[in-house]
Structure formats: structure tokens, C-alpha cells
Amino acid sequence: AQSVSQHNHHVILSEAASLELGCNYSYGGTVNLFWYVQYPGQHLQLLLKYFSGDPLVKGIKGFEAEFIKSKFSFNLRKPSVQWSDTAEYFCAVNAINTGRRALTFGSGTRLQVQP
Amino acid sequence: ETGVTQSPTHLIKTRGQQVTLRCSSQSGHNTVSWYQQALGQGPQFIFQYYREEENGRGNFPPRFSGLQFPNYSSELNVNALELDDSALYLCASSLSASGIYNEQFFGPGTRLTVL
Image 1 (cartoon, each protein chain N blue to C red):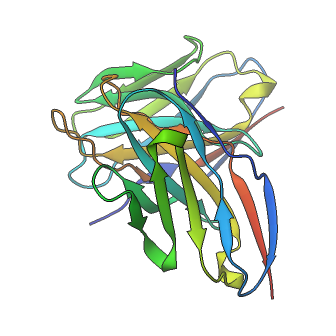
Image 2: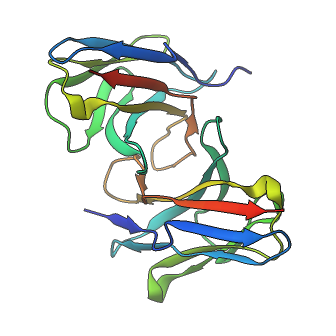
């Protein structure tokens, strides 16, 4: 069964700092990869997704992520964070060819941006 | 186009009771997935319904059951509630087609507290 690891549980940054959140998954086959964000009091929203093609994907609000197949990683980045980026971030994987379209989530990273 | 809605928003039950949670999928979507999100954790897959049939199940006991109706709305039923069932229950809908994965859209969740 696939699993997802997010090693940073809580990250505190100042505004304008650069962000990189780690995500590693364990599954040897083809995967779809996602980053979701959960702002305080709001529901999960999709930030970006990777299905195939260019391993560098761009999402909403200036976020991007790079899929490195050899490292089983899909790290999330943003060059300059804002206070409004304070939220919980979840990496998720869907393993293709398992016949199931469910997502396996990491445990999340809580990002706190200080003004 | 309406998004995914869930009811009720909050629910308090006592151990041993039964609960039913409801989800209306986004217009045009035929697949509903249910997830359990314990405090401080990422969502965990419970099961998925596609065209009224269960299409995969996570590592949850049989006292977690579900239904999908012809209009693609869904119910999650939990019998013999335990304290550890206290969590946010998320419903996600998507449009599934053979061999094609489409992203899941999440509802706001139902917060269940078991006393």
C-alpha cells in the first residue's frame, strides 16, 4: 500500500521568506500527485496537481511543485510567502493501476507566516 | 454549479450510538469518497462509491458503511460509536470515467464528537 510522508510538521516563516515543504511517497508504480491547502475554518482546496508531462507544475497563488521520480518526492515551493498563506498543507497521492481513485494523504504541515 | 455540501456541520453523540452523515456531490459528479480526518492528522480514506456501488475501501471496520443514491448523493453510517471515532468527516466528489482520474472536490466536513 502507498504511503505519504511530510517531514515538516510545523513551519514558521516571516513574510517574504521562501518556502519549501517536503513530500515523499512510497509506491513503485505510476502516481498522480497533489497538494491541498486547508485555510483556517475552510475546507480542503486543491493547490496544484501532477498527472504527467513537465515535472515542474505551477498552481494557484504562486505555488509550484517539482516531481522527482527517482527520489519519490513532490516538494512544494513558493519564492515569497505572505501572511495569508498561513494554513495547513497536505500532500496526497493517487496510485494509478490500483483500480482505486482514492487519495492517500500525508499528515500535513502547518505553516505559520508572521507579518 | 454548486459545490460539495455536507450535513450536519457538527454532531455530538455518545459511545455506542449510531450516526448518519450526509453528502451532496457537486453537480455532474458521479463518484463520492469519504475520509476521516482526526485532529492533527491528514485525511484517511474510508470508502468510495461510484454509480451507487462501493468502489474501494480503506482500513476501516464494517461498522463504517455507506450508500450512494441515484442522484449521486451519499451517506456515511457509523454504528457502535467509539471515542476514537471523534474526527472531521470529509466527503469528496469527482467525475470518474474509465481510465481517467479527475480531481476530487472536498466539502466542508462534519465534525463528530463522541463522548
